[in-house]
Amino acid sequence: MTHNIRTCLWFRDGRGPEAAKFYCDLIPGSRIERSFGADAGMGPFTVTDFTLAGTPYQILDAGPHFTLTEAVSISVETDDQAETDRLWAALTADGGEESVCGWLKDRFGVSWQVFPRRLTELTLSKDKKVSAAATAAMMKQKKIDIAEIEAAVRAAA
Image (cartoon, rainbow, N blue to C red; front, side):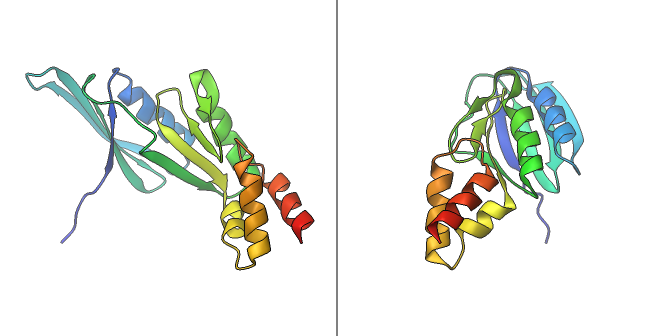
């Protein structure tokens, strides 16, 4: 038995298809699969199914009934600092907002956490000193700066 499971993001401002295109253009290996709309009697809606680097998502753009919240976010573990920087710049541009520990909110109101894979390696290290130093350094950052975190780890050794 197979299931088509997607995370659905509720948009309320008619910008859902625009957001899906932006995300697919931004993340390599992504594509829009289909988009359709109708008026279901309670007002018009648009559904956009898309895949970000192999992970399926859906945007339901259906008016003001619900709002996006930080309780749902997209987490992106990047290969390196350069990719972290590229995504961070694009996602915070044009009205996006930085937060803490690699978190941000894009111009559409979707929350993301963007961080280099090296952060995971350091914070999950079996060496408790490494893990503690990396976590403490991360907690002081907005956009993750892995060189700064590695410096904190070296200083704690």
